[in-house]
Length: 467
Image (cartoon, rainbow, N blue to C red; front, side, top):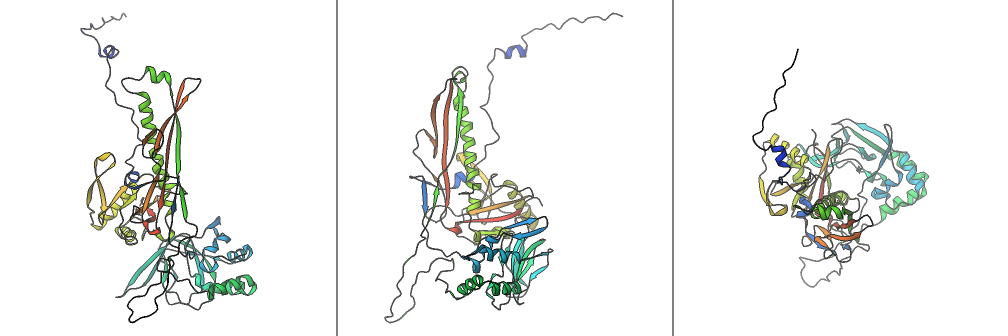
């Protein structure tokens, strides 16, 4: 059987594929998915740091052991790290690792289911409690019946530390587990036994009990003695404002990279787009993204790690609710904006919808001078920031801050006037051509952030966004 071969189709005009070889295409500049709005960089007021360091002078504050206690676990067995017991006010400054080790060894592990009462108001306070894992709600009788919330404690917090002073006191609040909770408890009997055996511990606790508390205001700052409402000619009190002896200094951090472009590329393939310009544009965008990441997460100056422990609060039930954001706002004046991961903002929106609450949307000037729509709460905008981490368990954090030096808030730090500066605090400098004809440019950004007063920054922690 023979097959008839069909004649090829006769072209009447030049084909499109062939024509493209002689045509100049219309093309975009190189695109990247890494660029974000970078609201934090946009909204922080920036202070020029001339000498590379920024000193925050504050009024003297008496720190009374309001830190977190650290734990380790062997399987299901949880232990407190002995030196961490010095975070309890009565044990602060206690000399002797053996004494702290003996105290740590006497803690008993107790586990509570959600809803169980750990300690009840009005009952004798019989143990020091360290919260190793979970959330604990603090309640007291309300003014008109029912229970009034007094706060929430979570991992690393503690209560009942005055039991160390052998004070016959009653629990002022009721402590109830909101989630499955692991608590380490040191009973009064164990404390009395150790006090009898250790003269060092006994002397330290007696000195702490008898020492007068330094005069201070409700924020823990050294008091300023004043007189008011007097009549006649009384002797007025003398006073002075005491400062911290060792104020904190913030040094500028740096993000740097070496951009390499072969001279052949820059010379021969430089049209219609400037290859060096596009390489620098994308590199600068990456540097700015890293800058915002460091301002949030850096362990030295990042906002998540520099929030005062007393300004870190827990959610009431897990997901972010209007009540939680109200609690954040109530702890500071002139809150300028919230900062949250986009998924956290979506979780907050779901909670508002569930309650039938619909927060208004504001139009603000965003990065690049464009008008943007952002969600608000109580008139405070909520800006998205994907640099805030989300844990594998689906929890994140929400930040709120007051900003500016005039308002004793949070400020960004940078150094302007650098050689080859292409943006505030960011420079691009020619670094030479090597023997391979590769041109090198040094891209540098110098920055940091400072919290001028502790209540300028607040964090809502352990926000569940996966529920």
